[in-house]
Image (cartoon, rainbow, N blue to C red):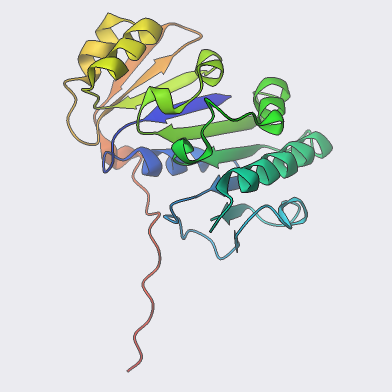
Length: 211
């Protein structure tokens, strides 16, 4: 299953993405902005990810450089692991996909995951500020769009074309922390107004201060 979460900063898209990811017992989080501190298993790139997936429930990758090549490594390891473990449920969460430039960069292993992974067991969640940050090929096969308040004219046009005028009109009037879920398979939408139902803490733990 492929879920796209779209919204400006401080709307809650990263928090929502993590909340949805918790439905899977195995989670890989690509975190180029270094926002997550929900586990101590944090890697700077994809080295060692395949081995860790056998033992850990959640692994965060926070690349310090070479972001696109790191994402390539992550997708390759994740794709290999789900093929070797077809009965496992797992999710790949890619936060802020602007950094990996999917409209102009090919990721063959990501394509393997999205197109050939078991949609009942394998999930991919992507967050972005704008629809255009995600390639049209990926948008075309997304199962769900979760859209926070959007007002930019071009973005609303893309939403209108994919989800319909009603959805485009509604997302332009949402308040902070509210979003609409568009089910592409069913062609229906649901308005989500209660942020308390999906809020989880993803922030870094405070360092203890010596006495």
